[in-house]
Amino acid sequence: AALSEDVDDLIADTPGRDDVFARHLATSADTLVTPINDSFIDFDLIGQVDPETFQVTRPSFYSELIWDARKTRAKTDGRTMDWIILRNRLQHVDAHNMRRVGEALTQLSRRVGFRVIPGLGERVIYRELFPAGLTLLDKAHLGGMGIGHVVARQELREAMGGLSLPVRERLHPDGDLFAA
Image 1 (cartoon, rainbow, N blue to C red):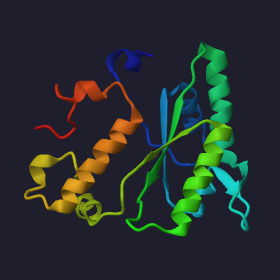
Image 2: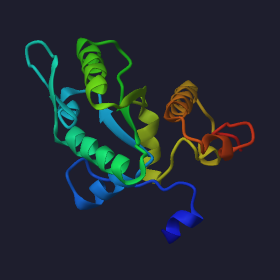
Image 3: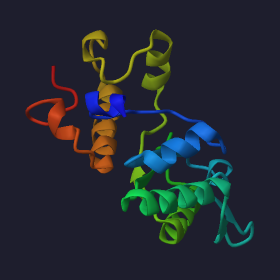
């Protein structure tokens, strides 16, 4: 309670498994972002599909965990969280699997109530920044920016915009995440 009086936002990174800490956060979060790679390996965390038709057959344990957490929250304070699935490490070529994962996400979203937003593409810039502990927001440390940097920054802007968080207006007077 004391922490919530001093901060506007709290970001917690939890593993995608059933864990006491994750359950507690899920019942108190206003927004939950679940990044998943564009594969049925990652999709299996939230839903199962028929291997022949790729139709969703049922939600998986994590979707059920979040569903239960949302019910608990609604009973406690009448509110619920905004659950967002962020498609991550997207390939830059159209592929059957990418479309199938997208269709499965749409089907499952109708059943368990999450929103899907585009995430970040698979880009070398992320691998280059990681060892130095940098992100695209560390503008001063990036040096000259090539087209890949510019495109990656635009993807990040779009992903942040898709979250629809109120914090966006507080970042910089013009709402730009990347303003100096």
